[in-house]
Image 1 (cartoon, rainbow, N blue to C red):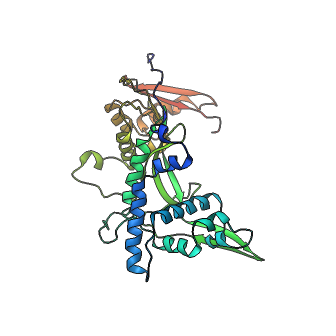
Image 2 (cartoon, rainbow, N blue to C red):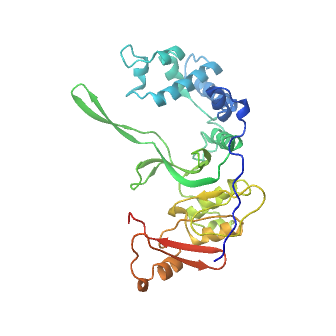
Image 3 (cartoon, rainbow, N blue to C red):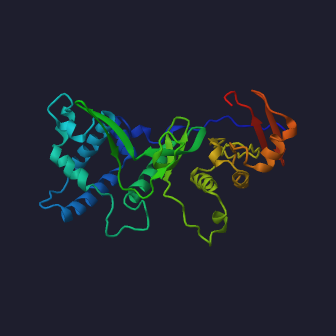
Length: 338
């Protein structure tokens, strides 16, 4: 082994367009551009005019009020949406000042983000694809990531059981909707929901995200992609979204650093993404990385070398390491919690 000089991280981090932000609303509009509002107004009116008798087109101001209601409702939680307009202690004057209850539910019932007649029915995300792509661009365009970046999977709850007490009666209500790419993963804290692959930096800023829409149909004409596992495809896709100079830091340690005046960034991830093949592909792209792996990935290193039976059982705090050619270092350690 040899020492590897690593540059001090001096990149500018945080908001790119912070000079134009003076209020919370300015920050929201920066991340949620007017283009999205235009889509919401246009497609909602287009859909409602075909399904609602005597529909009055929603205005831009009403749509802003509707969005404001949703944000407020995300902070102040009540058992039912109707309760926000009630005259009892649960009622919220702020909500009543924005929209009448009937108008809110009219917009809520007809809310659309795309034209049903022209959307790609083979795309499970087609109803919101345009808005998602705008947000993906906006999130990256308005932020300079900090040094430590994490790739991970997130489960957004979509089917939720709520226990309610109404007088002396206790009941459980299941909240769910129609989504063709909902996932169920028993081992996760959120068992059922929508899986999202995400990249966030050390300040917990979501730099990029992509929905997992289910098992992909392999493209026989794309040989490199066809031979990759799901986790390897995610790693390489996220790598392609990171600006030049950002290194991926997962478990295998690569010493060929990039010196272009921008690095070194450090990309962190858990053992779902760890494999020898992913490490090798990242090294080919001249990325700095450290990849956390299960003991079976790669078997040749962990089972045959680091965890070989002849070496005996490791004690708390023990670690072993092995080099695999001049570029990769694999380490196994015994955590105190194991």
